[in-house]
Length: 284
Image 1 (tube, rainbow, N blue to C red):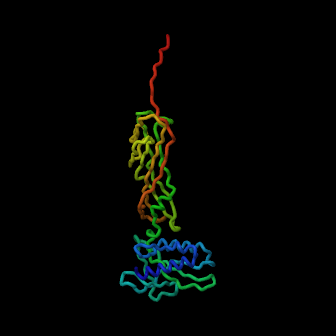
Image 2 (image 1 turned 180 degrees about the vertical axis):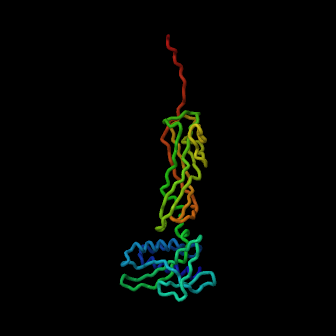
């Protein structure tokens, strides 16, 4: 593991401990094949946590600022031992931030600590390097699943509380795009969700049907089920949603790497048999 990563991990750990001993176990470092690394998202979460503490009571602070030109630790193009203008003027000037899809990246994240509220602050030290906003504020599939996605609309025809055995029972839904907003690490995110497929459970122990079409109402129906036994059942519809997101105010959309599901169930309805009966003719 590089010395810069090791240094950043240690600094972030110290920052958590200084902010709150109870939070130390939540340090944003992950072990993977005996290597420890700090993710930009973990560092941003640490910054937000620290900012919940009143300024006069903080033992740790974070700030984003440009980096002064430094010395490469492991060779050209690898990483840098950088300094911050937060600690004084940069003799070599501030590095130009790299571009992210034509827009500048977020500046490096720096931290400083103190032992008590009466102690002097340490110098600012590097926590995380330049990062593209789309990487830091990415909407994960877990974030997507937690959104209040609407249940799919579900219509059963005929809609009268009963259907006929051995006759087509028509079903359909609405193919709509859901538009929502959420926040990731305090950043507003626009989200759109479209149904990737619908799965129909008929309630009679027959095989479910999965479709990519929403169906249509009578008389242009494209989806139906024929019940073969008398019973009282409910139709259950599960929609599988695919999503995309973008930072609010940006134009570039990104796919959510995963799907979410919502389910709707019809009111119970009866499957009836149509019987004919003879009626005696009336006398003239």
